[in-house]
Length: 214
Image (cartoon, rainbow, N blue to C red):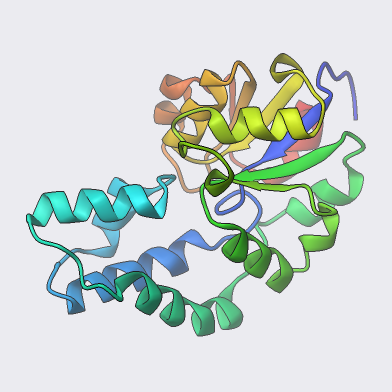
C-alpha cells in the first residue's frame, strides 16, 4: 500500500465505482428530446456531469423557459432500469482496489439512496461499503457544495483534513476541495485539466493506480 496520510477514503458513486453515466446520460437525452426539450447525448455529458438531478432539471427548465412534464423524473427512472440491468459494469479496476484497500471507506454521492443501492447491488459492490453510504439528499445542498462530504466525514468520525475524496466530475472535485479534503481526480472520461483547475491534487486515468497513490 505504501505510505499513507489518510484515515478515510470517500468514493463518489457514478463514474467512480460504477460506469453508469454513459447509460444514464443516453436515457436522459432521449427522454428530454421526446418530451420536447431537444438535446444531444454530448450536450448532456458536457452540461450535467456531476450535478444533482434537481439542479439538472432546474437548468433545463431555465434554458428552455418552460416546465418539464410532471412525470418526467419517474419516466426517466423507469426507462433507466432495463439498460442498467443489462449493461452496467463496475468501473474497470475498482473491484481489485476495494479488495486490497485497508483504509476505512464510504460512498458520498449526488444521487439518491435508492439509485446508489440499486447500482452498487447490480455490480456486486454494495457489500463492500457495509451501509456506509451517504447522499446529497441527506444534507441541505448537493455538490459542488461540501455538505455531503462533511456529512460523510462526520458520520465516519474522521476530520475532513484526514479524508481523501475520489471524484470524476468538476462539481464533485469542487465539493471535496471546499470540504477541506484532499481530492484525487479520476479522469478516464473527464477532462484532466478541468479536474485539476477545480482543486484535484492528483489526477489519474486508471483506477488500478489508486492503491499506489494512497
